[in-house]
Image (cartoon, rainbow, N blue to C red; front, top):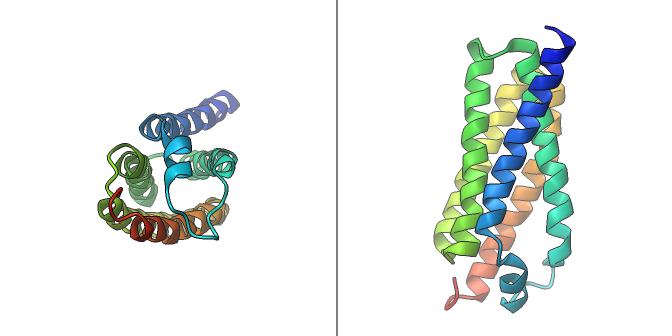
Length: 162
């Protein structure tokens, strides 16, 4: 594969990740205000932390997908792994809308559980193809695990809002 194709592929996977981030961000445009108004558990992070963390995570997601694509293209097991990756990206994007735009606490909690399993599946499939790609997704899994607990706690603390 030529260097130009590799660079183009990297830019494409990063662009896809950040398009997903942008659509999710559009759904959570009111998140800073909404987050401040909610009853939060003591261990909830400050609102300013989410942007930098998600920026790093989306970057790692794009690089991970690129590593698999660069080595295998869209063939065989890589095709399936990349398809599962696309599903988890869609689920990631949807969560922001469910929680911040539509105020669906229970639905967003169920959805984040499904997202968590999609991330685990992506990691397992990547591990079989490119271990570095799988390892790049571990911080994402850790953050979504934390977010799942936070989603549940906020939903329980704000039953009349979510």
